[in-house]
Length: 78
Image (cartoon, rainbow, N blue to C red; front, side, top):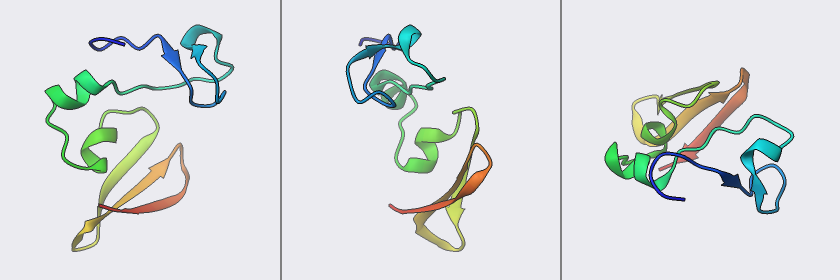
């Protein structure tokens, strides 16, 4: 995969599958996108992903908080 266009995934199916054949909607942030945006943490990585709300967790910037498609809250230590 080069550039911004992803064509294959292993997410969801656990096999190398074409994105058009995947049974679910999958959003992909390519390495090139992450490098171009100078991503430094998980919050930066998912900032423009549909269905994800992310922010730092409280005053401690070592943790990220996110809600994925309106379900639950996930904390991730940076």
